[in-house]
Structure formats: C-alpha cells, structure tokens
Image 1 (tube, rainbow, N blue to C red):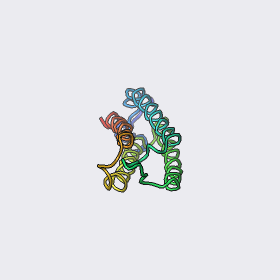
Image 2 (cartoon, helix red, strand yellow):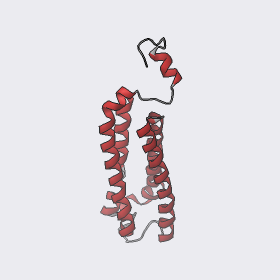
Image 3 (cartoon, rainbow, N blue to C red):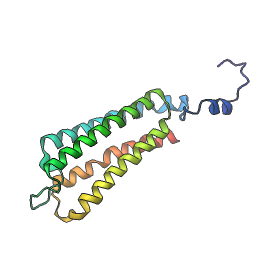
Image 4 (cartoon, rainbow, N blue to C red):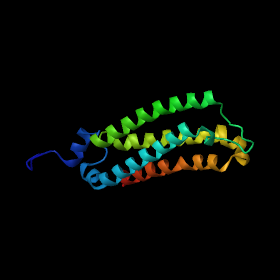
Length: 158
C-alpha cells in the first residue's frame, strides 16, 4: 500500500483476516517450515512403504499374531491414504498461499494426534507387553512427524 494510506495496520488486519500469519513473519520462517514439510512427507512415505512391503511389522505381537487382519489393514490403509492426501493438499495450499495457515496447522496437529491416540487406545494398550520391537518402533515412528508439525506451529505462533 502507499504511504498516504489512512488504513492502520490493525484495520488492515481486520480487513484481511485470512492472513493469520503476517507476511513478514511468514518470510522469516518459511524456509524452516518448508524443510520440515519435506521431512514429514519423507517420513510418511517411508512408513507407507514399510506398511506395503512389510505388513507383518504393523502391530504384531510376540505370539506372531496380528492385531488386525489383512482386510482390516488394507481398509484402514485406504482410508488413511485418502485422509493423508486431502490433509497434505489442504496444508500445502494453506502454507503456500498463507491463507488460514495457523488454523490449518492446529487442525493438522489435532487430526494427527487423534489418529495416533486412537491407534494406541484401540490396538496398543490391549497388548502393550506382547508387541514386538518392530511394532513398537512403528508406533514411536508416528511421533516424529507430530513433533515436526508442532514445531511448525510454534514457529508461526510466535
């Protein structure tokens, strides 16, 4: 805007509420958030590959019985993939356009936390002592992207 504008920064912020992160702030943290988004995508891609190639690592007990049948795993996998692609699309659109990015980031944190918690509650707590090392590693592996999303939130919140 020109220097002769009579619109104050507060009024401008009220007129453009979809910019929840100021462009100045976004330009300072954009590179870090972009690197974390790439890392999150790579981690989820590795996890998807592991689930596809080694389904025996997904929630297997020491008695070598799976907590989910192969039909359940494939159904859950399909639903989660749709959720992942929709969520990543919305997150990236919000990030690159800086429209509602803070809100979308909070929603991403909530959805990822809920998915992790539901898996822990339904599948893991019932057989925690019997899970194998790879199964526990796959569970812990879910917390790394959640932590990176939380760091993104902290960057845009401050």
